[in-house]
Length: 299
Length: 186
Image 1 (cartoon, each protein chain N blue to C red):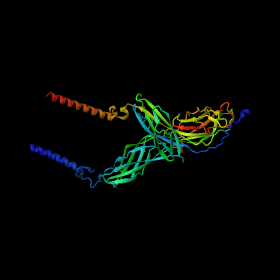
Image 2: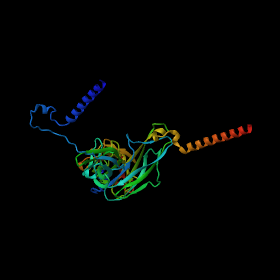
Image 3: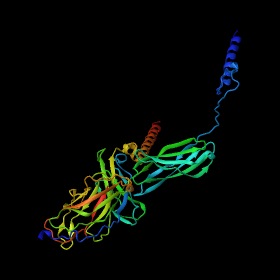
Image 4: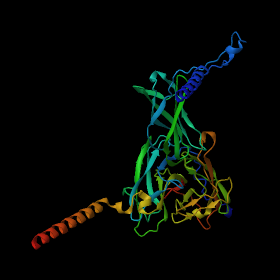
């Protein structure tokens, strides 16, 4: 009896196994042959031909980098793509490299160059331009590639650090005033100075500084037009920040956020005003000639 | 017309704008707030680098460096504080030595500010301007282990090795002495 029971169990499992073999992926019904209702039917079959996705198993270290003032700096990195199906299966024109940082525009090169092939591995070189207003800090390096079947793979394990640079360009180099009388007040200079932020540091309020010195009489050198009589403003009016002889004074309200100068960002204008002529000084020319010039600085 | 005395203040110069670019230079620092201060421990000295660049315009520049803040803990290593920065260069290094006293409080913060001013040749104009840019090195004081990730005992490894050798030697001497005494007693 035991023998029979065991045989029965084996038989049942054999049927189940057979059933599993017959049913599999075809969508035709198992009992179709019983009904005999259909002479033909459409059957869809999914047939997979083995494709191994490529892998990016190496992205080169990106050393500390700095922007180039008022321009772009080209930063490069290498990455290795390996495909078990052979390098012929790697889509060479699909290699893309990018630098990503939240709140910043992504910098991309979609034509990374194939620089070497060894075995199943291709090494790509990606050169990406970063602009002078791109923020300092860590940027994620994103390396992406596809194979010829469209399978895409990316690696975002590496970071690139962009350092903090302070830079500026200013023009013009000198200021002039119209003819002044001893009683003249609120006399704005004929020129204003334009400052472009040419790097990636945001210049915050108080960090646009002007260092002034007393203007000396060119004939009577003991007479001075005092620096304290001048003010500097970021609007085209007098009444700005008062200057102090030989001391750097932050121009109140003046800020220069890093930005694309060509697009009108990252710029500031400074207006210089002689509030009043120093009392009791002689009629003559006063200037910085042969003494220290004034300084406009950002930090 | 007494009040109409001309001061020539503006007359002597009708230099219409010479719109030449000045102060077209930059300085790069590896440290900033809040993410990346220079972390030092009490008693530590570190040399850090600021890098000058002159990539705009067409002229070589000479810049004068000056520590304008934090001079109690920092100095310029090069006694010559004037730096020649040729046009097209972005790799002129300025080394700043930062030294922290032993008795400073942990979590103390310093800011080392270095200003670079362009040295210009005066052209005899009324009010001439030069430009300057500044870089900051924020310094934060931490304990040795926090600043280096190593335990205080590892501060001077050679001292540790010396101590270990002394202990081993002492043990050997004690052992030998003990042995000798034992053999004498026998």
